[in-house]
Amino acid sequence: MKSFRDRVAVITGAGSGIGRALAFELGAAGCKLALSDINEAAVKQVAKELKDAGRDVIADRLDVADRDAFYAYAEKVLKKFGTVNIVINNAGVALGSTVEDTSYEDFEWLMGINFWGVVYGTKAFLPHLKRADEGHIVNISSVFGLIGVPTQSAYNAAKFAVRGFTESLRQELEIEGSTVSCTSVHPGGIKTNIAKNARMSSKVSTITGLDGEASKEQFEKMFRTTPEQAAATIIAGIRGNKRRVLIGADAVAIDTMQRLLPTSYQKLMVSGQKLMRKRS
Ligand SMILES: NC(=O)c1ccc[n+]([C@@H]2O[C@H](COP(=O)([O-])OP(=O)(O)OC[C@H]3O[C@@H](n4cnc5c(N)ncnc54)[C@H](O)[C@@H]3O)[C@@H](O)[C@H]2O)c1
Image (cartoon, rainbow, N blue to C red; front, side, top):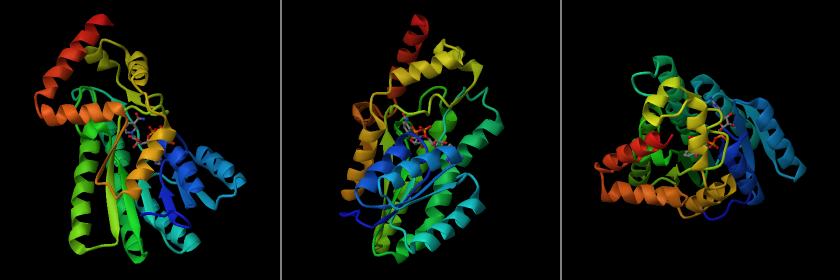
């Protein structure tokens, strides 16, 4: 997609972080915006700022883990704008916990948002995207969709799944000769609220040597890229119809490590984690 003028863009999780920054960048590029978030007050505030700047925007409360609500939302967007061109399945949450200590409730909570939310968003909008002259789906995975790391098993499972789902969809669309395309996005550490709002098990200390709060802080210290930089990289990825978008130098380093050491990268991770645990 080369031009965003008067294109209709749907963004989930638009009340904060990467989703919020995407709303501002795509709005500035000329898109009409359908923003949603489970945090209604946050997304309404984003919409207000955009409206004040003259953008055409609607904002709704949407829990992406609610399949019926997602389909009803797609109808609402279509009714408002008549078409849809870009769908960014961005809403996500984080969970730090060992496999042993993760409850099924927490696994299902995370998969409901980070995996099923992406599937619902893709399937609810795909028929509408196909009816437009041009369409693009952006699914936000992570560098943790490229490598597995300790305490992130549920997040890893969801983000690897998002990558596989998106890569499969991309090939199907190409074989069909569709006017719709899609991109799998793999951010490194982005300075957002994700770690602050993460569910953390107290047992992460068996791995990290730190309690839940300190583990969050340790994660946040590694976040280097701003949401605005992330949004600009994603938009360049849509323009260039990229299959995979990496965000940040850390993401490039992790991708390179995975290619060079497809399985033995795990030994490096284990040594690094042990060293950090000793220092903490
Ligand atoms: N920040 C990072 O370092 C990082 C790295 C890799 C991938 N990501 C991914 O980027 C995406 C955006 O995260 P962010 O970093 O901007 O975090 P963020 O916490 O700043 O924003 C996430 C937004 O999603 C919303 N949300 C949470 N649960 C929801 C639900 N059930 N339905 C709808 N909305 C919901 C939150 O209210 C919030 O506004 C996520 O998919 C995340 O996994 C982030």
